[in-house]
Image 1 (cartoon, rainbow, N blue to C red):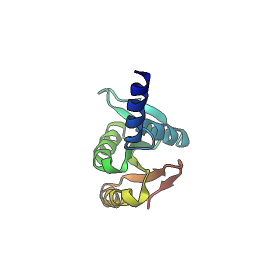
Image 2: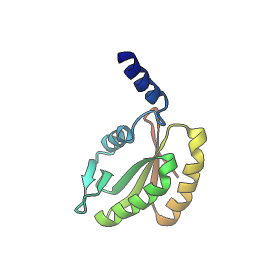
Image 3: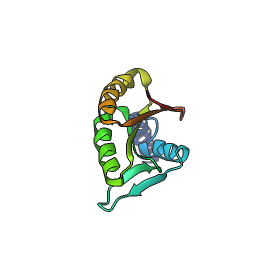
Image 4: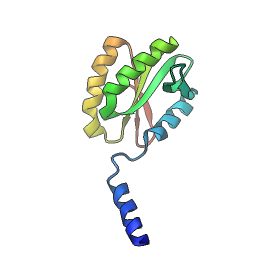
Length: 125
């Protein structure tokens, strides 16, 4: 029974889609930006990181569409600038999502950063 449990747990870890959970990156970003982690709005939604200037959504690259909507909404609700930190665990694969995000970010004045698997955060221009 213990062996079966071990094999099931190992198999699920091997099939994990990401190196780390989203929350892992959220905490790094918010610490680096000196923000409030999971700031709760009156409507019970949570901003991943609220700084004095930005309402930041942190998300995996393939979820950039969701990040756009969330960052715009959070910015509106807090009167802060919308921001997105895109998680790029596999930059070669994820670059297509970043390119798409950049087009929308430019049109809607969303600040964009990336974070990689080495915890390096870069502002996107």
